[in-house]
Length: 257
Ligand SMILES: [Zn+2]
Image (cartoon, rainbow, N blue to C red; front, top):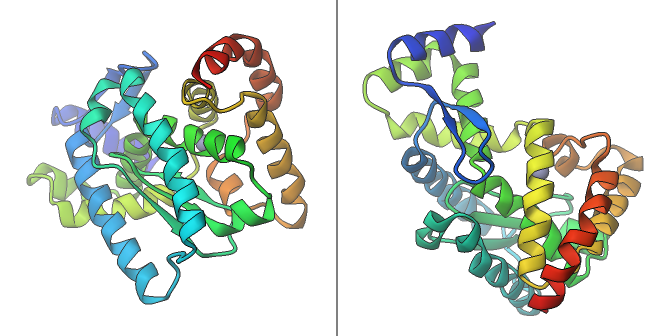
């Protein structure tokens, strides 16, 4: 209910509106601009990195860091063909040394992948390409902005006051943190699957690995769901839908490899 009230207030103030996403065409209700989302994400990312550094949680495994960087560089090179403004993003990727099964990409291309997901799921390069392709797709499709908008609505009046008084970024940085812990919508997940598998194919990563990845993920959820699945709720027919995309993706992949 709070969400609806805040939205109504913002709409009345002319500060929020529905916009068709330039990549997916889907209409999104956004309370923050792309610039605000990126600035607050950059701030939240810098803070997360400095904390991880202090706790010794940034992986010092040079081979692993190089492997992840090589894969994300290939995806980034293709991201600009899907969403041109991403060519100007200040991309960054961190390998976080934690047992969690997790990976994410904030608005503006600030990414992380956890050693837990790489080691426990024994991810191949193709599977890392798929998971980071999926995460990057969320960012290209403006899903981070949608989650931040929900986080703002959840914080209600306080954030509303700050927005009306001129977009105080010190309020938005925690919003970027909260947004990371909120689940994406199932609709958003289907979109990220669809665009993620294509981004990965264009970067030369096998579309079949997308199916293998989600099979591994669901097998791992036996001992309590991984963090990743709490923020990435599965559309019921995820594997089926990805399977149906494989024949269309194979020629793109064959051409790219
Ligand atoms: Zn997702």
